[in-house]
Structures are given as C-alpha cells and as structure tokens.
Image 1 (cartoon, rainbow, N blue to C red):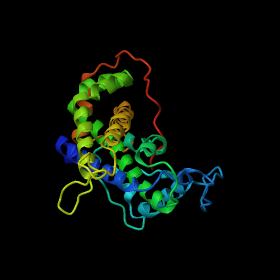
Image 2 (cartoon, one colour; image 1 turned 180 degrees about the horizontal axis):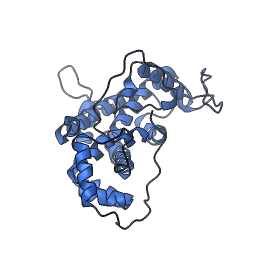
Image 3 (cartoon, rainbow, N blue to C red; image 1 turned 90 degrees about the vertical axis):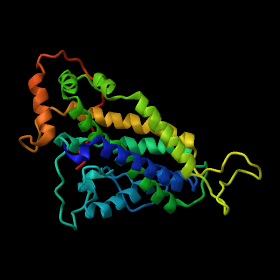
Image 4 (cartoon, one colour; image 1 turned 135 degrees about the vertical axis):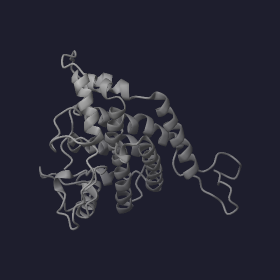
Length: 303
C-alpha cells in the first residue's frame, strides 16, 4: 500500500487541514459580510461565464487566482480541485507524474459548485458580521483561501475512501456491486471518530482565535474577567465540520466507492490497491441483490 494511504498519514493531513481552515476563517472574519462581493453585476468585473453572465467579484477573483495557480501545476496534484476546471491555463512548469494511488474515477469527482454555494449561504452568515464595510477586494481575496481549504479537505475523502476500501475490500465490493449507496455510507461512517473531530475543531478554534495580551493572558470582552474575546466562534467551527465538512466528505467517499470497481481508465491495474480489488472481485458473487442508490450523480470532471 502506498504511504499516502496509510491511516497515520491520512490522519496527519486531515488534522493539519483543520488548522488551515480555522486560520482562514479567522482572517475572513475580520471583515463584514459584504454582499456585493457575491452578487453578479454588483461590481462590474471584466469577466463573464459561457452564458454571458457577468461574474461576481468573488467568482472573478477565484477564477483569476486559479489561472495563476493552475499555470504552476497546482491542479495537477490529485488532492487539489479547481472551481473553474474547464478554464485552466497551460502549464509553465513541466508536469509531475504522481503515483497512481487512486482509481481513475477520482478524476471525475468534483463537488466544488456545491462547496461554493454552501460557503456563501451557510458559512459566511455565521462567520462574518452583517453589513458592508466596503473592503470588497480584501473580502474576496480572503474568501479564496477559505474555499481552497474547504475544497481540499472535502475532496480528501477520495483518499479516505480508498484506504477504507483496502481495509475491507470484500464488504465494500458487495455493497458496490449492489449499488447500495446507503449501505456504503453506513459502513464508512464512524460516529465516535466524527464526534472527536468536532470537539477537536471546537477546541482549536477556541485556542487559535484568542487575543493574547502583553502579559500572555487571553484578552476578555469588556473590562471584567468574562469569556475570552475570540476572533471566530468555536461553535461555528464545530458546526461547519459537523454539518458541512464531514457530510460532504462522506458524499465524495460514496461517489468514489460506487465507481471503485469500474474498469480503470489507466489500463491494467497494478500495485496494492489493484491486488486488493482483484482479490475482492474474485471473492464476491456477481448475483448480489441490487437496489437504487439515494446518492446524487457525480459532478463534472475536475480536469
């Protein structure tokens, strides 16, 4: 098995990504909601989608950021996903060949459209103060790292799903052949682990978001010794993980696993992942009962 799929490496990466998400939220929270940033035509940016609709300022800044990052091969990495995958520029650096640790179906899974809308509709209202402070450029440029961090964390579900499949190939293969999305969701869900993640995120947000005074003590609201003054609500960070990040991550896992037994577009399988898949295929009956999954279709290809 590739080291990228070891449980220790996956856990370490997911924990670091918690830090990135919380710190990006802290940065964005210093500005108001600033609704014109998210409203097409509110700010006349020189950018339009393929239907002729003018981009919002956020969409424009996000797309232009991806033009730069894409040219230096950010989106050739299997753990990065563009919000405008069809508009990526040519590379100015030679491409890197990454080890094929995921099934080729991973390339067709990109739920960034959903992440963008959830961020604007469900995260920003709790993260930012209402109103308009006219810091539109700063707002949009700080939204971008929030979105990139959320996208990376959620799409990391592909690596999590592959590791889970390799740990229980027979059980997952039976559910995949039955197209049992609900059964896959139940098998991959560990509610105790999720509870611990939510509480860790809550504690991190309470720690990272404190203002520290000159004597090293946390600053407090008002003049008394009340609750520490925090840059972002720990309850918000916990809710985002519990209600958005982990459910969307598991959605990616299910989308990946439903196609895990498809013929690999890269050709004959090789390595530990393919050996596990072949072993599972040989041990499973092809006459397993089938029922329609309650899972949405996969999103448009990421590249």
